[in-house]
Amino acid sequence: MSNWEGIDEFVAVAETGHFTGAATRLGVSSSHVSRQIARLEDRLQSRLFYRSTRRVSLTEAGQTFLQHCQRLIDARDEALQAITDLGSEPKGLLRMTCAVAYGESFIMPIVDDFMQQHPQLRVEMTLTNQTLDLLHGSYDLAIRLGRLQDSSLIATRIAPRHMYLCAAPAYLERFGAPHSLSELPRHNCLIGSSDVWTFQQRGRELPVRVQGNWRCNSGQAVLAAALRGFGLCQLPDYYVQGHLRSGALRALLPQHQPPHTAVWALYPQQRHLSPKVRQLVDHLKRGLAERPEYSTP
View 1 (cartoon, one colour):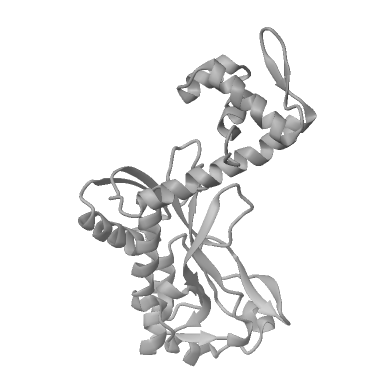
View 2 (cartoon, one colour):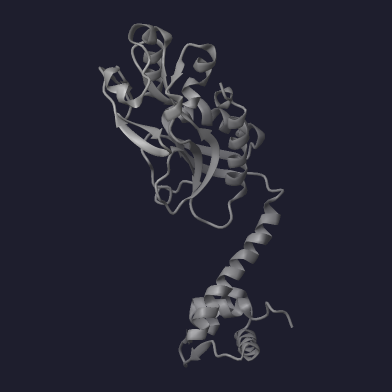
């Protein structure tokens, strides 16, 4: 006798509340379900259901057993589906979202390449700097930057994200370079979406409020102003790596560089990812790793 025998019937009865509903779900007769439950209870030497003429309900032992059985069935079905999906072609609609600038420059070219390889796939991308609700918006995937808030979503790291404090040589020649965080108030800081910049001091994160005569909620605009020598900027690696290598920007206060964050792929919590989401996430990892912006200057 298999240890699995009666498990599916037990879960079906527990979830539908009666033997007839379980039989319909499983495509078998009610008598078959009844026999399997009786054999299972006999094997366990424990009563799993209270029976009445109209409905059945779980005993305390049945409630405990149900939790374990549901996990077993989920794991079994996931294992079977994973093998089936190994050779599956991504197809159908995939809805995803990403921040505007990063999505345009980094994510969409990789997504386009993925779609060329899988012509049966359709992608609907929403580029927005707002944090959308994946569940209520019926999104399969979100690309998020930086630190994640506590969430019921599953997160996969697809690229590093290092923040740099930078300035152009022209600015440094005129105003000098800061040698400590306490000197930042003396400098003109190019402010993006926040006037609180994060640094690291004695192994701990330190938020510092900065000030300046220039502000814009566009990373590209902040970068352009920094390159023209208007002031200091704090930007992620993918904006500044090339300019650090060329010498157009210089990294400042490296001893206070903030802890690394990341670029994340987020998807609704579920045990098994569809082939289209799983394969696209893997493709994004490989594609971002090949970008020169992610190489160390």
